[in-house]
Image (cartoon, rainbow, N blue to C red; front, side, top):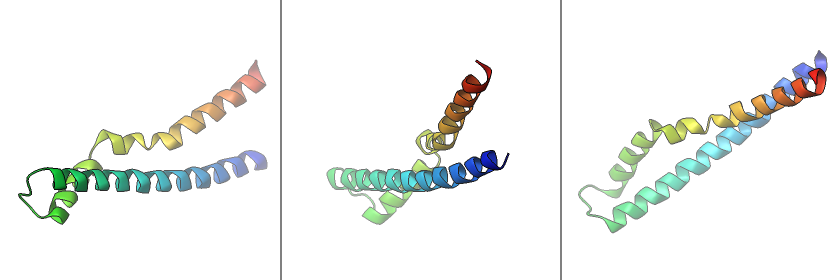
Length: 88
């Protein structure tokens, strides 16, 4: 039981670090794409406002929610492996 608790706690910490890094990376990629789009298009508003509005739309997008798969996929894989190991 102690081993399972240790696995859950360490796994949660590792997955949280991966999630935060992936989230920051995805947001920086989105920011650079918005800056590039601003330079290539018509500059109706200043760059910072354009990027800020784009990031607000990104925060509500499905892509941002898909990053939560970092938590779901490994838990399902470990669960399947444990099940197959013990009950097959």
